[in-house]
Length: 176
Length: 165
Image 1 (cartoon, helix red, strand yellow):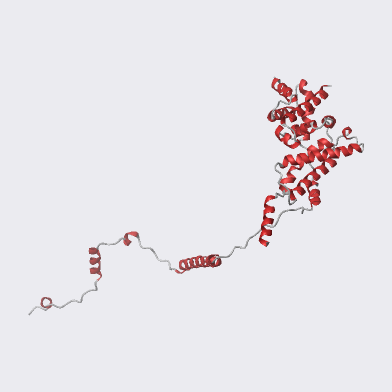
Image 2: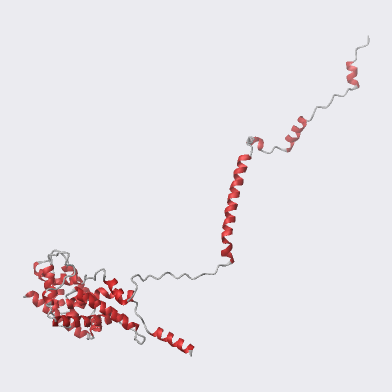
């Protein structure tokens, strides 16, 4: 019986895959932050979203019956985007005018092009989902259509269509 | 300068027909300080995307997150040192070294002492050092033999006797 119990513990330990917080999760933080910033336009809110995302993935991987995460970057992108959208919805319900004053990452350093930057960020932020997430993941993170499709649970054709529409909206705004 | 290629890339970019590499070319092009007037209007878009891609979390983020996760801030475990049993050779190795050191010192001291105590001897010229032939040695021995005492002979006595008167 003891032997059985011991061997079952060994079996559980070998099938579960606990993520290493420092080497597997922390290196993902900046790209998740950029995605959250694109959705929330608020650095503090984006930071909290990244924290929640990484902690959720870590806790999930520590559950004894947890299945190993096959595609960690895609999984984290999915969770981060979902959490950021939920948070944005909550903030919008509190009547926070997010798109009127986008938060800049380095406001302590005055930049003459800040006004243009704010205008373009607001323009991207006004895109509908999933156009906005597709555009951010492609044009800011440089992901392939395949990677974006995996993260957003879309087909590659849908990703391409969303990117096309998002870019057209931005172009029209620039030409007007 | 002909910007037809960039214009074509731009058109395909807005149609979502560009590859990742072509989009990197556009990013690099709009990073330039001087741009043609007709393409200037797209510079803010690409420069903003470029700037968004460089956003990073602040310094305190890791510390805050590790605290929330209940993990130590410095996760550098002490290196595991497994004890290795010493062999007999490992045990006597220091004595070998000591013995070698003593031998070297003794050898040096002996050489120095010999050099100091040896009396200086003039060296013979090279010609003399050369081995002489056997005959010349024999003749030299002959000359060095002690002188024989003179023997009185009858002839000598007669020659020396005074003449009869």
